[in-house]
Every structure is written in structure tokens, then in C-alpha cells.
Length: 309
Length: 302
Image (cartoon, rainbow over all chains, first blue to last red):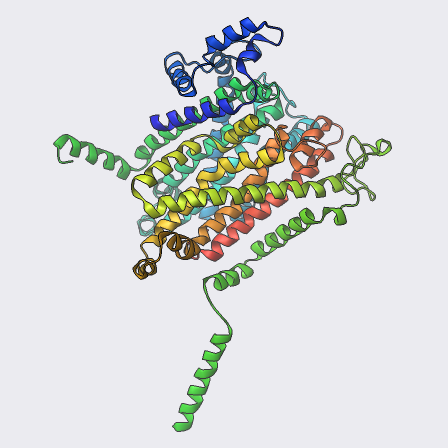
């Protein structure tokens, strides 16, 4: 994970270099004298060779969490992003919960009654969910639930009722993928011998499906859910702009129209870091979901302790 | 007895002749399976329809996309303007048909570029293995660690909004996916006997990869590319919606949506139709990709 993070930082640094415009000029403003401008360049280290700048950037990032200075507010980017981060995380987290709970339920139902009406409608639903662009679905939700039905407010972010539509919007696309994965994973497991054994010994159908089948079908579902979190973060950026939610995404998009490049890069970097952490957590969850994986880790560790490897 | 024997051989000969006339092979068999799949055939016709719209909008669209007429602004869908008109009185149907060209172009070309670059990286990694494989795939992992939509946004922001940069942003962010798929399928083909045989005859590595291994590893790559066009279209529309892709007045589904957004309260049809176009095209590519997967790879079940 650390090498990946360093790589991400490198990508962000290179993109920063490619950005048009001169950060020093942006910070001091157009009316500043040449001396002030040169002093700022020196202060930012822009006159040093690229490789030294990269080193400074890495060191600054690791020791001080320095992501640069916003061109607009002249505040550290990290501070500005961290203020907005909880909103985005709540949004992404709630959508994740929605899509996992609903997706797994739908997928299990579809697999249990394969080729039934439930199955077909869940397939259709997931096709629609995958094919609908997030932002358009947000706009549709606004038209239907906010303008025609008037159940929820159109935009803003002040209380729970404001969260419903954005969470619904972000959650749907990953809901579709999770439903599909659950269905195919369950179908694979449901034909196994131990399911027949469980039925034969007289377990209730509910028990067979949840305790015996779902538990063994969990690994692909967890994998996909972890990968979907990246899509959720990307979707959150677009959805925040649709619903005018003051989160990291909206902040980044405003920064794009203001050509406030450090903010864009800082946002991408932080969200990518969160995504990698989530995938690390997913790896840990594996060992809880599947004892086989856990025992793999343990044997390797005890083998190392024993000095055989 | 003799008579029965001749009849028998005649029948055999006929069967053999029949077999000769009807060529069979993995691709032909795949096509047969595909043509039996109803949803794949429907989605294929929809895709062909979109390609025709993209190629000949000047003959199909009722008007030019920038034909403004303020006296008819915000006409609701009616007989004359089936999808209504926008704030400048431009015919929505015409704009959407012209917009097909941009969206399909971006989708197809960016996937093609990513496929070629990712394909080269993936086949080198899969073929040579070892340290080179390790290095290349770790670099791909790094790109994969950034959610693709965010990476595309960052690249598009760094390069500035234009058609070329939009395609670049989308293809760079999807290179790792193709590199992985190609690497995987090259590695499965690598151990097969005919590869050994070709090597024994003395074929060069380049010949081995491009003439013998890639054609046999093509099926999963084609499937991935078809599904990739779907997500490329969504990504392109998203970037244009955010104002980082194709700039107005050139019509593109995403940018049409974004300019209609402020009229959502009073003229919702302006928002609904562009999205429907996106959804239908993306859905068609998704369905067709699924159909291809079922047809080309019989082992994979849905």
C-alpha cells in the first residue's frame, strides 16, 4: 500500500507540473512587482531542479501534510479539504450501506428464485443502474421526488431530508454491480453439495440460504463492494455538483472553474488515499469472512516464526 | 448387405460434404451463439443505429445543430419538434443526433487507444513475466488506485477542455484495465502447446505474440472493450457535464444536459431526453458486451 501511495503522489506531482499557469504568479497576483514575484518563486522552490522539487514535495507531504496553497483563499489546501471531508465521507458511506444492503438482498432473492419475475426484474434494474449516468439520475430524482412529488428538497445540505436523494443517486450505480455479483456468486454456491446436505438434514430454507449459501458466496461480493467504493467517490464528486452539496467534490469542481490547481490535485490525492485504505480494510475483512484466508496468513506467520521459510 | 453398406457410405459422404460447406470455427460458433441471443441482437441493432446516427447526422437530423430561433424557444415536445426546443430555440432532436457523433467518437476512439496501449503493456508483461511483469503491473496498480472518474477529472483539468484532451483523459485512466485483461489472457495462452511449437520452429517473440498468442487471447479482450465503450461514454458525458470536455456550441449529450440543468424546474424534458440517449446507448453496449461474453466464452456463465 505504501508503494502505491508513493506512486499516487508521483502521479499527482507530475500532473501538477503539467498544469497550465504559474503558481507563484497566481499567489502574488497580477499587480505584484517583479521582486515580490521572484521572492515568491524562491519561497515555493520553483527555481530548483524538478527532481529536488519532487523531493521537497514528498518531504513536505509526509512531515507537514503539505498539499500546497489554495490560489483563491491563500489557505493550506489540506485544511480546506479536511473541513469538507466529513460531508463527502458520510455521503459515500451511507450510499455504500444502501447499495450493499439492498444489493445483497436483491441478489440473494434473484438467485434463490432463478428465472422468476424477481430475477428478471433485478437483472433489468441492474442494467438500468449501470447504464444511467450518475448525474442524470440525480437530475431525474430531483424532477420526480423534489419537483413533482415535493417529498424532498431540491438541493443544499442542511439536514437528513437533504441526504435522501444524493444517497439514492450515488448508491444506485454500485447497487447494480453488487446485485449482479451477489446473484452470480450465489448461483455458483447454491448448486454445491453442501447446500443439498443442509437441505437434506432439514434446515429451514432461510437458514440454508443465509447461513450456508450466502456465507460462502461473500468473498466476491466483498471484493466488488471494495472496488465500487472508488466509483462511489467519483460519483460523489459529480452528485455533489448536481445537488450543490458543500463537500470535497463540489470544492474540487469549483476549483476547476477557478483554475485552482493545487486544490484539484490535493482532492484527487486524498480521495485516492482513502480509496486505498478502504481496499486495505477489505483485505482484512476477507479473513473474517473466510477462515481459509485467515488460516493462510496464520500458517505463513507461524512458518516464518519457526524459521522454515 | 452390400447395398446397405453403400447407402451407409453415401450418407456419410453427404454428411461430410455438408460439414465441408458449413465451415466451423470458434468465431463462427461464437457468432451462432450470439445470433441466438435475443437481447444481444437487439442491442447490436441499437448500436448499429447509433453508429449510423454518428456517421450521417447531416442527412438524418431535421436541422443543423446550431440553428437558433428565439421565437420558438422552449417549445414543448410536439409534432413539429418531437423532443422540443431549448433556450435558444434549437431543435433538441437535431442537437441530440449531432451529439451522437461526439459521444460515440469519444467512446470508441478512447477505448481503442487505451486498448492498444494497455494491450502492448499487458502482452509484454504477460509474455516475459518476471521482474518486467512486476514493474509494469505495479505501475498499473498505481493508476488503478486512483478512482478512474477522479483521474479523468484531474487529467482533463490539467490539459484543458477539448475533444482530444477528453479522449486522452479517458483512455489514460482506463489503460490499466486493458493491461490486466490482456496480461491475463496472454498468460493463459502462454502454456498451450501450439505456442511451444511455434517457438520450436524458430519464430521471433514479436511474431509469437502478435500472430499467434494475441489472436487466440482475443475473446475476453473484445468483451472488455465493448463494456469499456459503455463506461467511456458515461465518463465523457460526465466530464462534459462538468464543463471539462467538449465546449458549446458543439453538441454533446453531457454538455446539452449541463446547459439544460438550470431549466429543470420548468422544462424538465430538456433534461430527460439527453439522459435517455446516454442511457440507451450505454445500455446497448453493456447488453451487447454481456451477450459477447456468453457467446465467445461458453465456460463463463452469467
